[in-house]
Length: 490
View 1 (tube, rainbow, N blue to C red):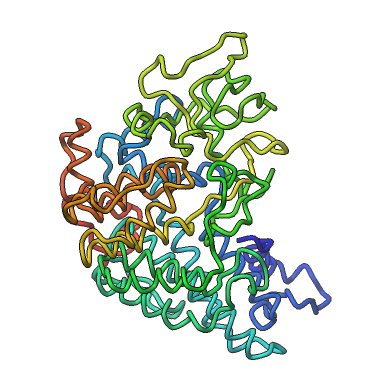
View 2: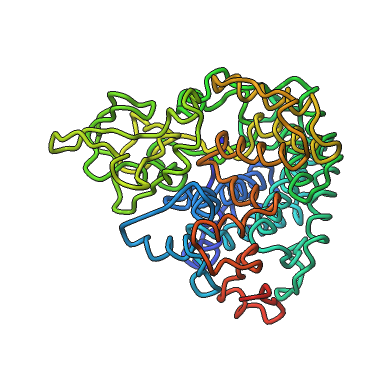
């Protein structure tokens, strides 16, 4: 994550094939034979696992957003070479052969898992390391492996459960429940091993707060309501995290290391391997100067403006309360390079997200804004939802939701407004849409609340079926592993 990624692994292995060129032995701690027996060497591999987990390489920085919101009721797309792949998401026509690596993450998850397993298989061979650091590095590797299996589950359900590089190359899938049970057990086991938030060696490395946040989300998304309520309360009671005062400024580059972001996908300015490319697909064609969207007065600084255009549905834009400040990061007006003032609302489904405002120091598409994966606001709304599922409408759930609404500048809810669990659940679904748009949450929220297929069909996607609740295993993965079975329906 925020640790500087050391991309040396492949290089070292290639060097091994050129030994005959060198007559003099290499005594570096990064020589191939020493790499996994030194602390810097094992940490370099750990950092590479973090990098694969974050997966911010070019267009892949938008994969969570694209996958979760083009299949839902927030985001549509037009133009560019990407349109063909986007159409599969919008129309629910994806299959194993149309798997888009900028939306469905298979390979990057397995690369992170592979590197984490190499760390775990070799950590006991590391020399001159104190045992506390050995235990922490091992726990970090287990954390990365666990959250990557969770990401795979979120897309595909059960997958092969590979716990060591010594496992057979071909493994069958495990069931959804077995995979989630493994992830939960791993996270619960390392919760007390990892440092408290703020005490990790570098910003962006795993800590106990991140573990609890992932457990909260996993419990919630597997409908283990009491566990979700308890774990979210543990985070709230700890007092380390809090809501950032200004919703819109929270996503600006200068504010990214804030008290609300619990876990992020890190980006770096002008670093092609780890950058945020959201503005490249959000800027409308011919963009010169913003007239709203929270970036009023910002002019084009040579940033990339791709032909692929990510556009927000009008229904989503107009669903906000008029005074809701959370929609201020939506661009509706700009000055074109030819001098014309363009009203994006004059064209259907054409407003644009400026949630991650342009990085003034960026060149091309390489902006440095982190993309949050779990925020403290998510913990508050997760507890509100879990309590509602346990006991129906209650004063604490209403109070938690009102914390979010207060920051957004809109009126409080009243308990008397909700007569049933279903009514409050529906409102929480709406509140989450307004709060977490362009953060890649919508698909899973709809799945959890049983609305994913229903909402797709209501948008006119008539071929949306229950089997679309999971994505297909990529065809190339099926061909590489004969024991791997495809999801039903594909």
